[in-house]
Image 1 (tube, rainbow, N blue to C red):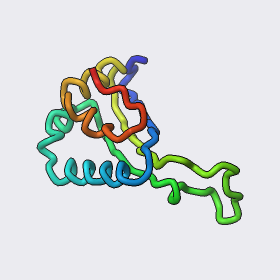
Image 2 (cartoon, rainbow, N blue to C red):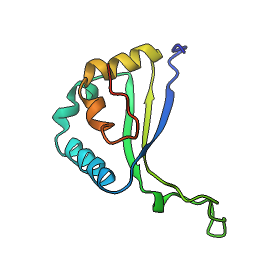
Image 3 (cartoon, one colour):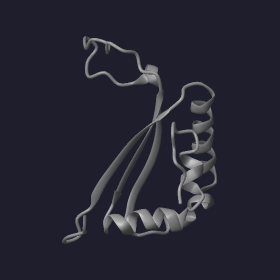
Length: 120
């Protein structure tokens, strides 16, 4: 993927979190990150990342399209972390920016995700 004529790309990532204490811990991590923006200074200074947001969606709060929509056959087993981002540049630049801008931040923010492999 390359940036052509200043186009911005969107990326959305949905990762499962085991419910219970890990969901609470994830929300605490987000609160700490929001309360201490200096922890994300390396990322905030990058001009080609326009937007980045992490949100926890608890399994009981999973959105339904309408009130009369039937419940899924199988109940969800996990809560989820939704990551949304907009950037322009190449995919390699974007990944390198996260790795260089907040090297421990990736592990910190995705610490509670199920089967997270840890950053390199």
